[in-house]
Image (spheres, rainbow, N blue to C red):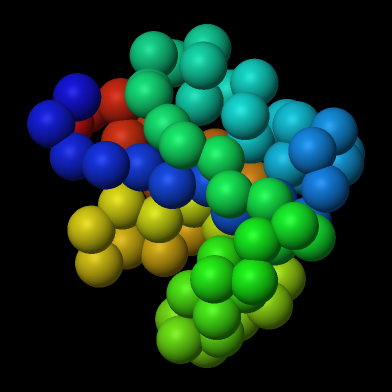
Length: 78
């Protein structure tokens, strides 16, 4: 996959975060996880995007808040 995908989570293993992580792996999307409970810069990044809710999946200018299966599936399309 040519573009970077970042998944912001509140705590590793949280229900929505885990569901999103598992789904992204299932559809073959490579991603980096940022844990906002341990990473102050990640918190600031979310604030600049105008959200504090997790999970948040970001690629380019696209910000997907929560588990949005339809939008996440499009990430696999490249």
